Each structure stands twice: as structure tokens, then as C-alpha cells.
Image (tube, rainbow, N blue to C red; front, side, top):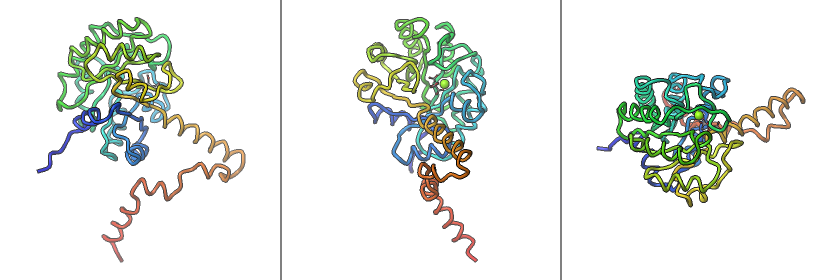
Length: 292
Ligand SMILES: C[C@](O)(C(=O)O)[C@H](CC(=O)O)C(=O)O
Ligand SMILES: [Mg+2]
């Protein structure tokens, strides 16, 4: 009998196999399929991405658990690669966080990260973030661990404390989260390799570096990050940002030129699109089933 591996187990296996594991943001099911096809071993659903792309909203804690679960289901329905999900602050107290774990697991997520910002959160790379006490964050982690229905579901604690309270506090918070059962730590808005090393030296669980563009963190290479003990490297919105610029260019050109000839070379062709979708397999099935 073949053992069916849970999404969480797959993510843990990928973390063990890759050094470091690169995790790419996939804003929708189709981009997730492309990332899978080119060989990525782990995918990410960004909270900012859900807010921006699915709702046209800023990343300020305005989307809900259901909003995110809808996008999780779409992506996990289209790929087999494990998906790490941004759970923001967990959307409330212990019982809300419990629902977040259970619903995300049911939707097919492999794990989530939950952060120590206040509910009225901001992007981790913006000024004037506010964080909750260490005790409150530890309670969030405890509630998450207690709610697990699959013991392989990965619970990652994110600390946004570096900006306001400094490195020592951010590390202490991370240690307290690990003590409470966190499987991994997301060190947010880190600015130097030395700081990453301080996190990885102090912790005995995988540490994630968020290499998001146009933020506080330089675009360190995965080798540099592996050199300071980082296990997971996140590119949450890289493809999304590129897609946005490409789309804007097309919209502008169609208006300016009256046709799309100048930008057609920048487009994925119909043949390429169909290839990623396995379109022809579907069509053959249709022909075989309903041949006239
Ligand atoms: C990782 C992140 O939480 C996200 O929602 O993708 C964002 C990314 C970004 O805004 O660049 C964050 O770092 O807060
Ligand atoms: Mg986020």
C-alpha cells in the first residue's frame, strides 16, 4: 500500500532535502503550476499577495481567513508542491487561531507563519509597525500547536520585533516561540548576514530569510544565506511584481498603439500556456469519450 504523504510532511521533507530550501510566491493556481514545472520544491501564498491581487487592497490586515483559504484551495488543487501560507496575526485570539490552523490544513496548506504584530498590522518592511508582548505571541504559538490536526503541519513563528526592539529581543522572542512548540522561525526585515547568523546560532529550528524586493533586506544570494545557517529563503512577491509590470506595459501599449503588436513578443504564447495546463491531455480525453 502506498502511504499518502500529508502536505506538511512533504514540506518537512523538502526542508530536510534542500540547503537552503527556496520558497517562491505563487499568486494563483496557474503561476503555481509554472513554478512546479520548472522544479520548485515549495510554494508560498503571500498575505500581501492575497490582499493586493485578489482584492485590490493594501497589506494592512483587511483580508480574512476565508479569503486566504479560497486562494489556498485554488493553488493546492492545481499542484502537488507543498504550500506555506501567510496567516498574518492569525485573525484573533486562541479560538480564531485554532480555526486558522484547522481550516488551512483542510484547504491543503503544508504550514503557516503567524506573526507578533498587532491585528492592525502592516507590511513587515514598513516603518511604525507595532508588536504584541512576547507573552501574547507565545500564546499565539501555543494555540497553533494545540490546534494541529496533522502533526506534520508546519508552524512557523514570525517576529517583527527587530525594527522596534532590536536583535536581542527578536532572538529572545524566537526562542520563546520555539519553546512553545514553533517548528521554524521567520526573521522579518533583517538587514545583514551577521544578524541572520545571530538568529541561526541561537536557535535549533530552521530559520527563514524573507528576500522580498524593495524592502529592508538586501537581495542576498541563497549561498550567502546558507553560509550563515539560513535554511529557508522566501521570495514572496517576486513573480507578482514582474507580472504587474508586464501587464501594465501591455495595457499602456494597447491604448497608445491601437494594437498589441509591439508587446506580443513579451507574451507567453498559446502553445506555452496550453503546455503548462496539459491542455492537450484534456482535449484527447474529450475526443476519446465523446467521439462522433
Ligand atoms: C512576506 C509578506 O508578509 C507577504 O505578505 O508576502 C510581506 C512581503 C512584502 O510586503 O514585501 C512582508 O514582508 O510583510
Ligand atoms: Mg504578509
